Amino acid sequence: DAGVIQSPRHEVTEMGQEVTLRCKPISGHNSLFWYRQTMMRGLELLIYFNNNVPIDDSGMPEDRFSAKMPNASFSTLKIQPSEPRDSAVYFCASSQKPSGGLGNEQFFGPGTRLTVL
Amino acid sequence: AQSVTQPDIHITVSEGASLELRCNYSYGATPYLFWYVQSPGQGLQLLLKYFSGDTLVQGIKGFEAEFKRSQSSFNLRKPSVHWSDAAEYFCAVGPRSNDYKLSFGAGTTVTVRA
Picture (tube, rainbow over the protein chains, first blue to last red):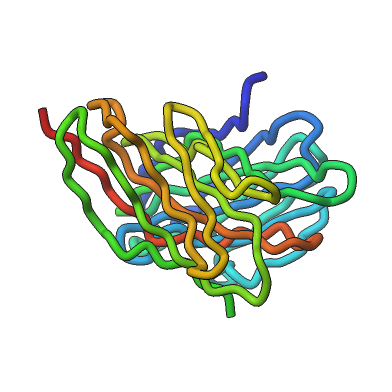
């Protein structure tokens, strides 16, 4: 099992540029989560999808952030335009709803370290 | 509103000594409970989880955690720490429903000295 795959692992860009982060969840998982981790705010949930549908995007900081999940094996998180305060590590995680709906263990990708200059 | 508190920001422990990390939660009902570990530059890895049954849960890497309903706690323990246990540890809780959101604590950084 390859686990959750994220790309790129590191991204350095200049303020105002568009940034696209990519995620491939574990095959068969039906929930996908995007998190942001910073020293100041810790681990924050930005958005999560269930069966490719956005369920809760209340954590998305502002309109500059958008996320899509066009199919069960791919998701993107886009920041346009990027700002220095967006610098953080962005994690994607996926989970599988087992029969009966019990349990919600999440499997995390290695993260994308974003630096906005 | 649900919340997770990890009172210790940083713990230093000698190699071979025991380790205990505290986690308290505030929730409307008994949630699902998790401990994750994050090594430098890595993603979060699940150590163990509690859904129901035996309140003492065994995990990977020799860790265990005990759920105490009366104290709303889920403390993580390891009898003998190895240098490779130096990492950041996160407690997380999730609701017993179809809502799959997890709430994470702020994390505890563990330093292991020789």
